[in-house]
Length: 119
Image (cartoon, rainbow, N blue to C red; front, side, top):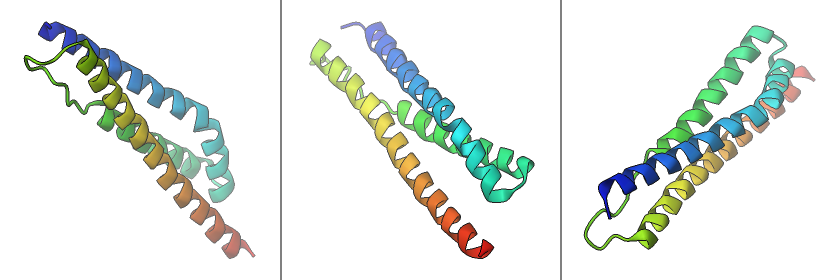
């Protein structure tokens, strides 16, 4: 197989992972904004934390999307190429999942602390 095939597949998978990350950020942005506005009672602080959370999610997704473990040796074929591409997408989605779990647990703890302080 030609090296350009691997580069094209890597770039396609990278764009796919990046698109999933951006769509995830867009889908939770409204809820994050409302959550932080309710938690902090200040729009500027809420805006800062929404941006910070978006950066964390974006860096988590792009960091895994950049990972490359493609087999480009003599034994490579279309099956190994597809397998490597799926592994790259799996790594990105797994990293996004872990990032969201950590953020959800952190936000839940913040919510409980804020609720207890306001009593």
